[in-house]
Image (cartoon, rainbow, N blue to C red; front, side, top):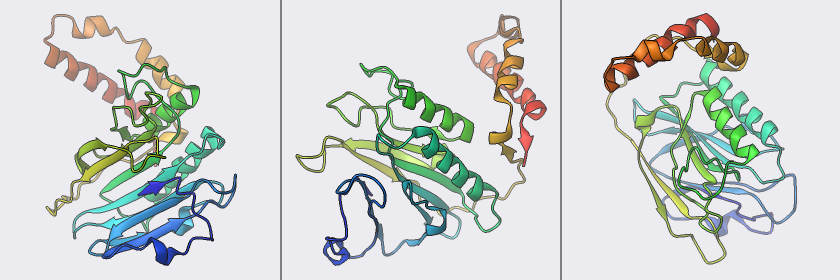
Length: 263
């Protein structure tokens, strides 16, 4: 996938085709002309369906159902957030999409993958950066935590500024086998290529009953306040590192049913 294509109606889609690949494009609809845009190539051998009904005119996103095998169907989101797009509005859009695909009866996925250029830096994801976290970067970090998704890129994707702007979020850590940063596509690009290898295992996924929580409706301040009252030192004192991790994890999990609202 390519974001910030700068394509418009002066470029014919026929000029963008590659043999044996399906081509999906979305040019910028609102905002400065001549910028933005998303272009996605998916191999013909892969069953892909675009969910245009989840897209909104104000945001440069594309959403797909990618079926790798009988047992593995991925919800893939491609995102580009220009700097002038309000980060709160953008993450609200993504949260609404996540809620829809997690709770909607017409959507059934083994994994969720969100990737693209979010144009904001969070040092918590790239600790070796010389740049501090931006306010918008902190907001995207909170969005990931609230949505129970994990960000995997941990190096500078824009070396010029030593920032990690191109991100990959997943709800299942096993669905991505590896991530590799490659040289930029051309001399006019200042972002590196982010190459992610998706686990296309065809092994059956065992169906299990699980509880789905409404993260947006949860009172997180109250939850954090309750955790602050726990005597963590006494809890883990004298324990080995492995035992301490288990004790802390179990204590946190015990609090979840008290505060998180079920769907």
